[in-house]
Image (cartoon, rainbow, N blue to C red; front, side, top):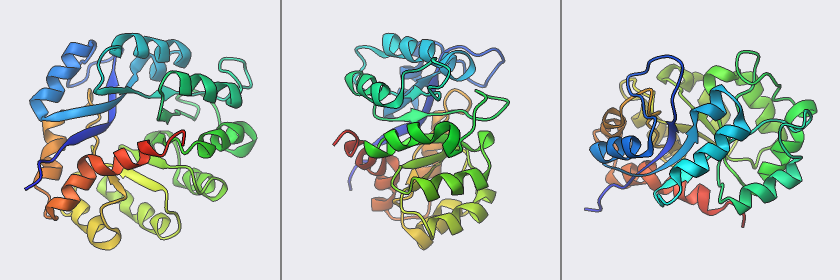
Length: 252
């Protein structure tokens, strides 16, 4: 039977201003947690980019994971209008030169203070869509109406919703009926039969393995997939194949 390779799509490094279950402030600590859980690769973003200044956090990330080929950088982005980041066409060149294949944004008043609507973020969303770069959105930063409006305007943008719970299926299912490039990661999908029901209805291609390290443990996230009542092939797809397929399309 094929070994299950785990590729974490939702991982953060760096100190935060309030305690978590785990405090992964250094790369070696992150690698220890990954090894303990049996996770081989991870997409990683930096806490400074989320809770402080994205350009600084993105550079800190590159510096800290340099030389670790199993850690892949994710940049946190801002709209360009204030001059904090380059216009989208220049930003895409910079991201490609730095090997960036995934991005995050944290919109809303309690995060980075901007709108997902076209008048504010449309140019950046179009640029990401043009290179097929996956965009991560934490569900606590957006409404489902905002997600729907984004998908209507950018249907070919790979959009990954993170930190969903089992009750969000009531939003996800009608969206999956309409959009082919919407995904969900698994770190908080802990309801009984949640993953099994998605696989039965939609197949396994919509689900990506994630841990949300440092907020949660990697072992629990791995167990959620390992012991799911689905086929081995579906477990392999969720654990790594689906994410690798998405990443392989970026910059083509």
